[in-house]
Image 1: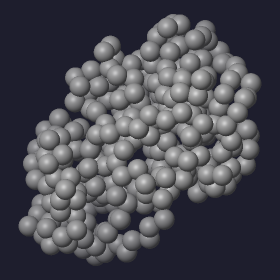
Image 2 (image 1 turned 180 degrees about the horizontal axis):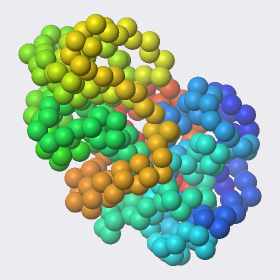
Image 3 (image 1 turned 180 degrees about the vertical axis):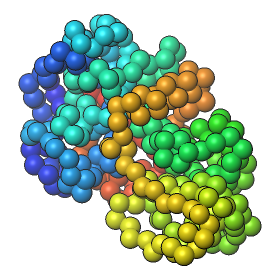
Image 4 (image 1 turned 135 degrees about the vertical axis):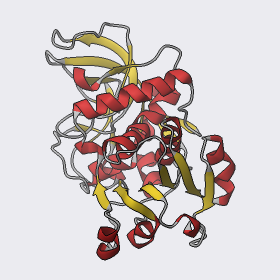
Length: 324
């Protein structure tokens, strides 16, 4: 099969495109013919070694896929050849990635694509949306009626987070660039603030129940000032940041700060997120803002563009069919 892979950790130049042996599924695995995969920031962390995780070389890169079942092992009950499926947790913890014509997926990390869902739109949102779900609910304990601040709401994770929080009955205060305000309002945000205006959020001081900064700036002094009593801050981006925590102000509010990486999510947590994602995909309310379709052989170039900040909210899809 054709694949994008690395033989050692390194820069985007380490990515190769060529032939590898077809993968062999185990008894609890499913062999999937890949329709499309994506490139996420976390994929660059794995490739570079910033995020250390067990890898077997040659290592096929990427994390998400949509595709069609070719073969299911006897322990992967419920999947049959021809089923349209998706996954968003390959490419780490010893699992090969899906940037290839074929991928092996553990049965407990594979989900059916809802009838009528566009596979390209779906693969573009399943990773950001799972991150959003886990940040809001698994780690943020969001409840209906609460006020959540989503920083970076026009981005891939932030937009999914806005949609999910609104659907859950929360009041969403979003920050974004002024030119993105109309888009963020279309997602259901109740108020959109210009992130470049430091004073814009001051009117909400003491009123935010849940604070999530998808941009990775992680200004904890500003975030703690916004928290309501027993407010929560969830850190989910900014692997290289070292923010200063105003501990006194935090404990006087009975507040908390919690970090998470989606790579640490359990299969059960991901399945719970998948159920919510599928519900929104089926309803047509969870969609990417913009996608770019590229051949699988363009993987190295996309990694470079992500590290240089060159996608600006677009999702890059890698399609094996475009290399034919």
